[in-house]
Image (cartoon, rainbow over all chains, first blue to last red; front, side, top):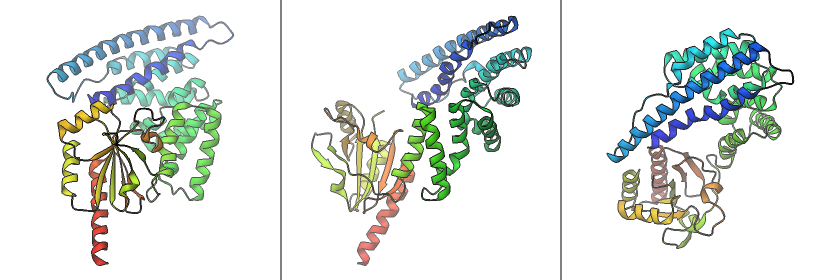
Length: 268
Length: 104
């Protein structure tokens, strides 16, 4: 079950992100073309979601059978989203240059995970078109949030180029925070915390974090950066005062002087 | 993981080495795991009944399992998720410590 749990959330993640995209209504009544495009978007996402539900039921059934047999589920089919990418790209063509085009393209970006070459190609196409015409759209937040994962498909260089463009063009502080994080990540992850470059990067991202107030980004920074500073190699470890499984009190420092292998474990 | 950790503890029994766990399960489940798998190391309860905080929060642990290897001065020498890497680091430290003790 472990593998299943670690993979499925990536696919699930796209669903709540997609929801607000359809409800972008400005003060002026939408044009007929816009209404039509929005209806098509609804229709396509409903179809894709239906296929996803069917896939999910299938995977759950496979997991149930594996568990009954006392086995771990090691392989299961990809979510069926790739089948819908051509439809979404075609719909984007039909409303090229309008804000609705971004909805279709962002859907493609959110749903083309996996090793399927057609899906990866669709992802690249969608990214190129979003970068060409929709960088300042606040909806690009969905893409900005995916920058840390996008580099595994687009490669480091292209992802950074996209981040730089977003950083320049966006009016949204959240998008900016994610884009800046993509730019600074190498320094923050691998730089020497005492170096001026690291300190500068840290100040820049922390100032943006305060403004953006983005829970997910906060958590990533906390996990990756603050952990690195507090629990860096060579740092003194904090003591632990606690009780063992028999309820007996002890401290980690009772064992100081030995090499300690501290194992955060659970019976999964 | 259990066989790896169990044999590590056995192998290092006579050495300046200790494996300490921080267990995140409900107490009954943890005890059952220990009994059924013959687990041979001492563990903290991550959040004993009545405790306000989890040890894993203090240690900023977000992915399980996480292993931290400390040297004899309580300094961090490894932090990560790989049992093999942590074991290699710990064994090297044990060897250096043993050598140092023999030289003194």
